[in-house]
Length: 143
Image (cartoon, rainbow, N blue to C red; front, top):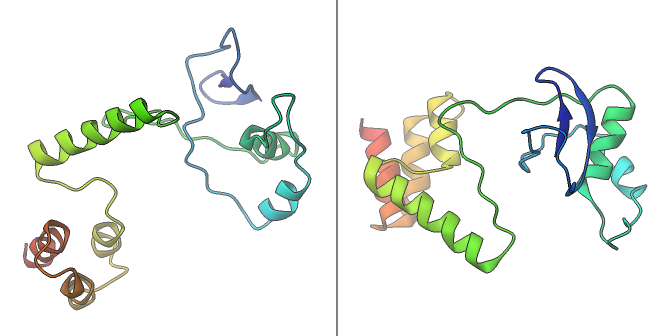
């Protein structure tokens, strides 16, 4: 959970009993080259776990942590239990079935950003044969 005023992070709290804000750290992190060195210094928490929040706090302590708020059209789904993983999978499946769009397609993102060509996309789709994802990629290439 973030102690966050909407612009600046003041703290990161792992599973607080009383959250300091309505903002959560969702688990999508982009870390720099210092992350392995920082991670090697992380010690187990009182719960006996290596917490990602400890690593993130090292960036906060060095005043180089930045966060991005997710706006409309984004969803965060907890997948820490079997039931919540199933719920998340059903949610994603429902979106994909109703919208006809894949969720989290790295090939689609690469193609739309010009990082790969149409031919690259078709070559990626080729070994996928006639499965649904291969068809989806071919459809993007042909659109």
